[in-house]
Length: 555
Image (cartoon, rainbow, N blue to C red; front, side, top):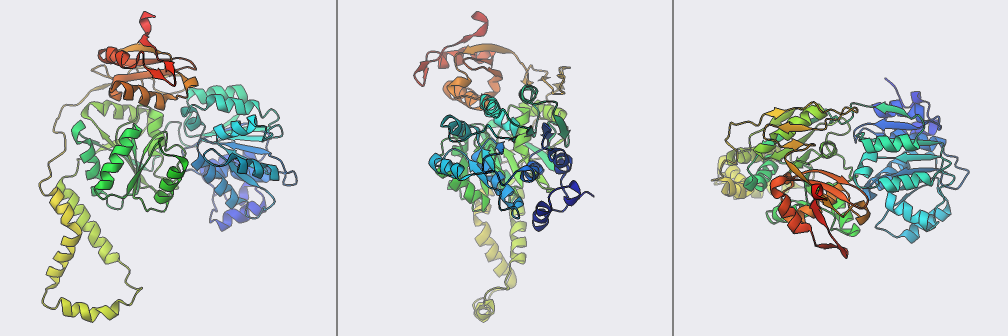
């Protein structure tokens, strides 16, 4: 089996990996590091999150840097503050025995003056989010002309967040780079276009298959009626005591609403969404990382770049509309060789989406029955018994209290004591679930799925349609609407979707594809809902600009 030493890296880096307990590189590290050490080869590395990509590019960068020169030689661009900080923390561990190399994180939400001061002191590797980096470039506070190596980490995430123009701007401002390294979990066409434009004959390495979900994840689903979706979520949480997970919602309103409800009912949970300022966001993430919070509920946009170890469950309160979003959500669990569970709560009419995901991601979903009240109580009871048995009593002078306890409970049998202990722990659960209804949808009808032959050249399925005309990543019985809002207005697909749904009070199921341009967008809407959306959106204002929405075919 290959070792880090066998990859030809600097002995000081080998010493650091040994101290960290890393002896054998992961697949992406083994395939990437020897290539990247040359320093002159453009490179594309495709691998799921949690497979060690930071070390795959961080170790070669540390070896290639000339520590005698005190200016930025390498630039790592990533989508979020959290990922930016995580990369710097990991690189700092690898460079423990290379103290002459300085690494700096620059990101929004904190003092740019302090970051400019740190840049002036001299750094070798800059890890940055696109927005803050461009701000520094425009202020002439950072000089990228001598940058030799540019790394685009989580490239698909950055494009999903609308950073394509920013990435291209950054690449244009690093004209002297020797190599561009791009790392991504998926390979959408937008990334392929960027690579063709700015990279020269890149070597491409794929670990696993593109758009294929992590095989160590068990994909499960529960079928629930719309009115019981929240109650189903509670049952799932209660049926999995000890769960440490992330719940994904479509909108920030859903995230906040569910968080408040669960908090009132005694769950250790908080929400992460776009309305939080950076201080609030940092507080929530700190509490989640130290496990003061059992659960984090988040929107896809707010959760970009979060990398927390040990997540046991990911729950989709609603299925995402995009296949790649599902891959990213599920990839938060099952990392570093551990197993994980991704649960989706769906409506019976959405089973065709699961079949599409199975086909595209080459995974298998397992249907589970929503636990009954008795099931939940039984699971909680056994979990409590295990905790009781495993409680550490070696610390503390408990022997002092044994005589008093024996005297106090002298008239009680062991069985009665155990019953009282159980009653103290389970009284709330037993009362709540005593007469709980069966939430399972008892309907044996199945939606037949028809797979149309519409696979694109890059192997991505463009259209999957059921027999009733509904489609996943494709077109149903839709009307195409024009709207004069685009990426220039600060929108990306997820935020634009939320914006028009909030305005029209329609459900996401009525939407088809969204094609966003700089100034305009085209939205496919179920024909029966098109007029309602037009009347709700057309004529309103956004940031002082009058919105125009109409049927694209009538233009």
